[in-house]
Structure formats: structure tokens, C-alpha cells
Image (tube, rainbow, N blue to C red):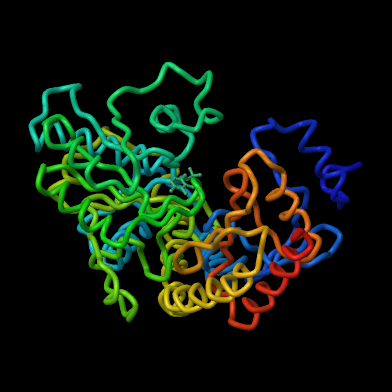
Length: 426
Ligand SMILES: *Cc1c(COP(=O)(O)O)cnc(C)c1O
């Protein structure tokens, strides 16, 4: 077999099993092509993608405008490192800071790197602006958080699988219950060493937990009261996924009528990744205003690939697509439709307890215990019926299609999902 021969699905799976580290447990399907909301496996079977690479592919697979910007830049200049200037990074930084309403952007590649960057930024701000004694700063995080896989980030995870035998852990984090304002106030009020509060506007990996409607605004107010930075990890919720440009949506110059109906909060530090590139390239960023970002000086932080010209060109195109194609509005409207259609089904279902979510970030909770195989088996059947999704935690299945999905496609998917679930009703 030559290296680039076309493989069968089984051959591709066998190769990964034999030669790749076993750090994932993929659904058995081998994809070789994508376009819009669709992906195809190596045997040519077509599927709706209802994971969107964990919300990285909000703009749809292989969006021609994003691919065009990428290939064009790839033929011109790919990487200079930040040892020199390049003629794309400044344009991108101006575009993205205006787009999201912040003074400055620090470019990185992956979500975890951007979270690390935000934590370092927060600590340095704590010592140099807030005046906390050196090495005493603490950052408040939430139980069941997911912020990535680095040593520091897993240090404040409470997922035993992600943590066990990776110690010793990084100190300086305090864990509180999510969606609990009293716990936040308690953590901040008698502790002058708290520098920041790191939070997901919706806990995606934990199972799409949407907090109470006033949680984020009130949490921000509590942070302000104690001079603590409110750090929003919008790696998964950002870039139109939840029906608004950002789930926090502070000062995003929203053309988007849905914003007015819900409370907005402007984070002090905003973390983006995933759909910042439309899934075409690893691009992440931390945004903040000058009073915070200016603590970072040459040599304090960096990345060889962060801010490279391809990333800059791709991110500009990806953000233009979100605006031009009104993806936030589409996610808002079709998200409401999706939940109301599924709720009709759930009324008479014994296998599904509920659907929850915002915009097109949704999940159903299967009526079975967390250790059961039911959600996994449902995902296998969904695959057979032409739709790809994956359980998050045991009995929870996340549904997050590309935001370019049309109403007709969404209704088609609702019927695939309900037809599949019916096979599991007893
Ligand atoms: C995916 C994700 C990350 C990590 O991003 P990577 O690119 O996988 O490092 C961080 N935070 C949240 C909320 C995420 O969903």
C-alpha cells in the first residue's frame, strides 16, 4: 500500500489505531470531504455534520471565501515569525478589534494557548496594576469547566480522566459552582488576592449548560465591585454560535436585533478560537483594552506561528462571512425552531428527557445513567441515518451544525434525529 492510496474506512481506522496515540475515542466514520453542512466518508456516503468540529466550522466546511483567502495568502507569504513585521497582522488586528470592540488583540493558534495567554495576562495585571503581592494571585474558575488540555488548564479541571497522573498541578486557582452568584461573591469578598474570574458563557463540553439569564451580567458586576477581571472563554460559544456574535455580546457592534432582548456583558478579557478561522486553520486570540493588555511587554509572551499572515488572512475572511451571511441571526432563528421541534417530540418520548441550548449550540439529555452506552448507540444509529453527532458526557448528545444550515436542511435533520430516537423508545 503506497502512503497516499485511497483507503477503505476500516483501513484508515486500523492505521490510526496502530500508529497513532490513543488520545481520542472517535465515532467510527472516516471523512474525506466536506462542503457547507455536509461531509462525506471515504466510501462516498453523505452526512450532515452536527458537531462542526466542536463549533470550529460555524461558517460551513470549505467555505470558498475562506479557502480563497487562505490559498491566496499561502502562495504569497506564510510565516515570518514575529521577529519581523508582516503586512497582514496589523490589518487583521485593526479589523478584529473593531469587530469585537476592544483596543488590542494578542494572536495565538489554539484555544488552550489563548486561555493560557489570558491567565498570564490576568496574573501580570494583578501584580502590576491591581497591586497583589508577587506569586499570591488567584483566579476563580467554575466546576465542570472545559478550557483546554495544557498542564495549567487541567490543573483546575475536575474531570478525573483529564487530570489523573498528570500532576503536580499549577497552583493559584479556586473552583466554585457554575451559575452560582453567591459562591462568586463569597470567593471574592474576603480575598484581596483574587485577580480574575474565568468563565464559559455556556458550559459546552460539560453538556451545554446554559446559566440563568442574569448570571453573566451579575457576575460581571460582582467582579467590578472587587476589581477582578471578568474573563470570558468564548472559544466555543463565540462567533455567532449561540445566536449572537458573542454569547456575552458586550459592545459587539451588532446589527443583530436579538441582542436587545437579552442582557449583555462586556468581558474585560475575551478569549476566541475555533470558528475564528472557520475551521480552516488554527487561529485563536485574546482581546482586551489597553489598561490590561499594555502590561504585556516584548519577550513576555509569544508563539512562532501566532499572528502569521495565513492566520490573519483566514480570520478576516472568516469574520466577514459571519457578518455578510448573517450567521448570528440564522443561528438564533433556527436554534429556536430546532428546540421547539424537538420539544414536540420529547413530550411523548421516554428516551429523551429534554433539549437545552442557545442558538445552534444545543444538547439532548438521554433518559439513562451516565455510564450507559445508550447515547453512544444513538450516535451510531444517527450516523447510519446520515447525521454525525457525539455524546459529551455519557448521556448527553450535543447538536451543533454549521451555522450556514438552511431551514429545509434543519427540518430534514430534525426528522432524521426523531426517526432515530424512535428506534430506541421502549
Ligand atoms: C475547545 C475549547 C478550548 C480549547 O481549544 P483547543 O483549540 O482545543 O485548544 C478552550 N475553551 C473552550 C470553551 C473550548 O470549547
